[in-house]
Image (cartoon, rainbow, N blue to C red; front, side, top):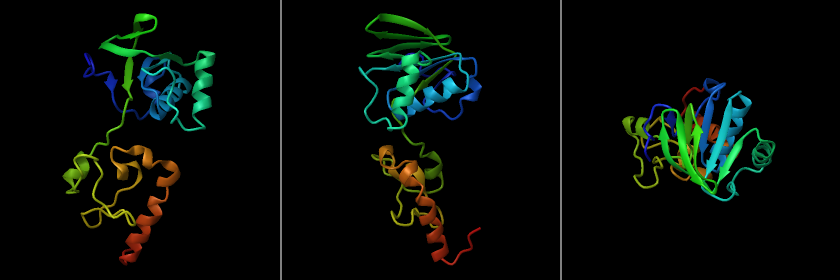
Length: 190
């Protein structure tokens, strides 16, 4: 989309604090977008606007996140523009179109959280084989060791594009499996 490559626009998010007293537009309607909107609001962003093309936020939002984001929207702490899509991003604003027509949203930062693609660059540089279609690194599903001996993967990266398969609640067991695999090789674990 026009403006997607501007320096204040990102497909990735890691920390809310740089956005204190900033106007932020978050595009998306699933877990990542809801969590980011909540974190930005709680970290003191001047304004948080959530833009989603659907008529409602996704039903796949985790059950403990959904009431929080819905209540922040209801009370006006997070503004939600549903059935709305981004038309253009400029250095100081985002143009959207929805039921209210075309609207200009002031924006110091824009997060396009409409789908996650893992960054496989480092894995490929290390020699890991990564499926071109699924972006799943080749690994043993029991030990999480990759095709490169001694290199293991853990967390959502083991699911490639299908990040909904692995999350904190089931990915937390990866560490124990990896430590067990290292110990089974007779290597010290600190």
